[in-house]
Image (cartoon, rainbow, N blue to C red; front, side, top):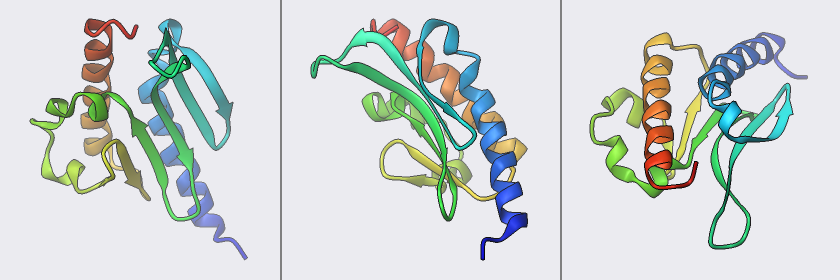
Length: 125
C-alpha cells in the first residue's frame, strides 16, 4: 500500500518545483501539464527537427525529479551551484528531491532563470 504521507509530501514538492518553471511558460510550449508531470519545450526546433526540451518536473516512485536541459547544454551554469544542490543531481540535468527545501529550491529557481537566459542568448527562445 502506498504511503499517503509521502504522496502528499511529493505533491507539495512537485507543486513547489513546478512554480520554478511555469513563470517561463509564456515564451515556451507546455508539452505536459498533469498533477504529476509538467514540461516545457522551446518553439525552436533542435537538430532532430523536434522542439528543444527546456525543463520539467515529474513525480516518480521514490522522488520528485526536476529536469533542466540548459545545465546539460551549458554545464558552466553549474559552476556557482552549492554542493548541496549538486548532491541532488542524477545524471547531467536531473535533480531529485523527496522533501521541501526552500533554500535549495530558491537556488534551483535562480539556476532555472540563468538557464532560461542562456537558452535565450543561444537562440533557443
